[in-house]
Length: 127
Image 1 (cartoon, rainbow, N blue to C red):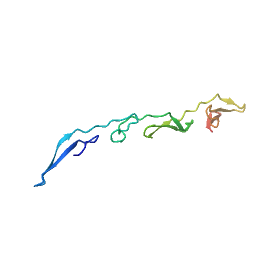
Image 2 (image 1 turned 120 degrees about the vertical axis):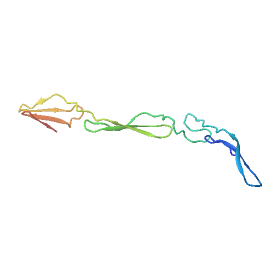
Image 3 (image 1 turned 90 degrees about the vertical axis):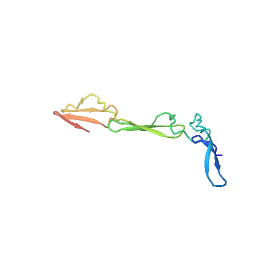
Image 4 (image 1 turned 90 degrees about the horizontal axis):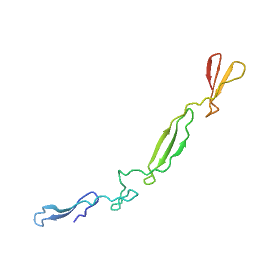
């Protein structure tokens, strides 16, 4: 007798002792998977292939800046699968124009003070 598994039917094998003819009969339905809260079958101990992930909190991998994308990720507490997402770069948040009194005007990004934009006599220069 072959016992049923989660996915395959069980059966009894018969064989003729004279001619060797064999056949299967007395089929028993497959047991089917029975999953616990961790998406593991309690019968065969295999993980579910289509179970939904149970994610933890998002963790920042790299902060987005004014000019470069960042990313964050979260992990399934059951299977360890990691999902990642892009954090898109911000646009500059320019402060007010400031004049130096000599025709030069400059403004600075509020998010990153290393980013400046300047102009003189109608021309614009980015730094």
